[in-house]
Length: 162
Image 1 (cartoon, helix red, strand yellow):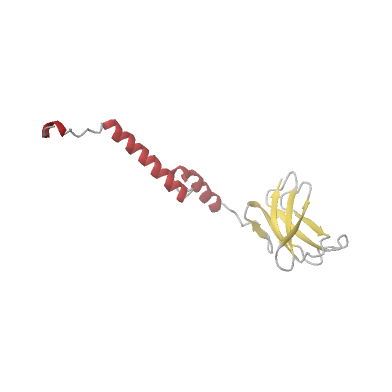
Image 2: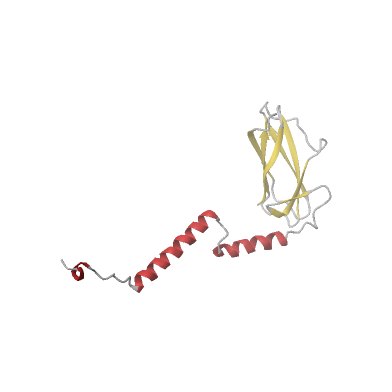
């Protein structure tokens, strides 16, 4: 075999293959970046902008003294009921009360849920209460009972205007 016969010319990579490889590489890179940093891609800009607008428009000016705004709904403010506001005659375990007020009212009532914790702050139970319609600017008291003898404290886990 002569030297000329054993030499093969290099095959050229066609332009369409280069374009296809480039597109695939960019797609793969975008997928990897989204997996590592979810929610930070340009496609989620409107979601992030909405969150900024929401927190910027949160109005606390209407909230009465002693009440705290509820982070998930700027129409609701709440506080724990005092001893004199909380009547535990129904419960053999523990009970709590929550005082709620609304800026715009809750036409179908209020729903609230407490997580019940033991002395080690381990959640062991829950309790809930509801109201009927609550007009704007009025207060409502929700009372929560438990018959769980291990109950020590409670944590507000849900509060919603219906």
